[in-house]
Length: 496
Image 1 (tube, rainbow, N blue to C red):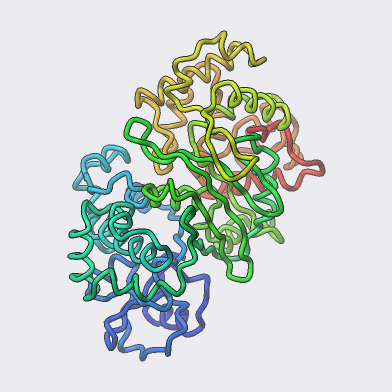
Image 2: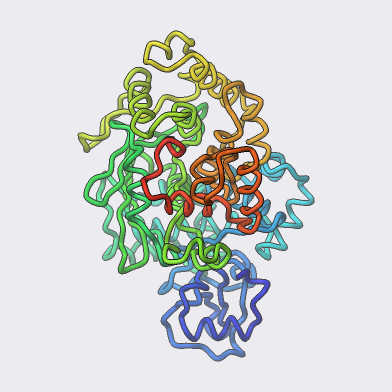
């Protein structure tokens, strides 16, 4: 259900019904008010002849519309694209939203997604209706608008947290695009801003259904004491945001469920305010809020029936996930968690937080790269796995291995496969969770063959892979559903 497949009449009908399934798939500009809205906006329905429909908020703003202050386009959920050019364009957009490309360095963005500058501009315009620069400007403005309305952060801090080079630039773009100054939003938002001085709070909408309990149980079963915790329906952990070589920020965050609002609530330490873009983006990826469960469920058919709310658990720290995948090879979840706990206690960084359950940050690639096989071996981690962990740390530190969300999964799998001790199953698992790749299929997974009632043989593996072709491009979700169907909780094969 992509925007290009919707006619103006279909868009208007979706708008009339306030159908949440279309939220984020398109935006509507109203010529009589010069405002653009989400299709679920509850303002008085405009006449169809006054409506124009756009594939992104940036395209609506490029056409001269300003955002609706009631439905707040910045709160619309994203959606996952599956076609090749669309995925490349969205990888570039992800870099912009993560703050990696705040200055919109097109050569850098193009290099990281493996295309030329010219091709990037073309596919970006096809997918979003605007250039990368226009998209970045809209993203910064909407994030600044959100921070001005929902927080009490100083205006200068909001400007830099939103990716602007100065307050002056933010003020100028607000005046140019919206026709008013940021201080107007600050005054109007004072009565609703609920953020305490030591924390920021955001609401992250999703498309229902959403099985938060299952996702929380998955994360809780694997939580490393000191780094993360799950208690009374709340997930907490310590994260590090920003480039390790360029002033990374460390702090805590927590995520809870707002089922009546079809949203998650995110709170994080004010120490992470300067990395707000990255924190929001990572949390959305970890909790898979951009997924369209009805689209995925329709593609998977009977496999997903009754459990369409299942989501793909992501990873706040791709490097951490990669090492945990190594530690989880051929052992149970409990054993992998024990080894990861020893590793963090030995080499992690102490961090002060207001929670007794959060005390340490997972070690950085640079810290791990300085260790020896014996250093890790003393923790009860076998030599081959210790060597693989060191190799991953050193290739990540050197830049030879990029596990950032949005990176090409095929290239990452190939690079991981070159590391001794990292097999195809581990590489696909890392791609599935660290890169949020929706089409991973871990080969030689005994549990998948059991779930499909196939023999644990090479022939069974081939049959499983052949059956999985029908589930493209959502094989990662098929994997989760197959694991779910097992009579006993899946353990060893999902240890990381």
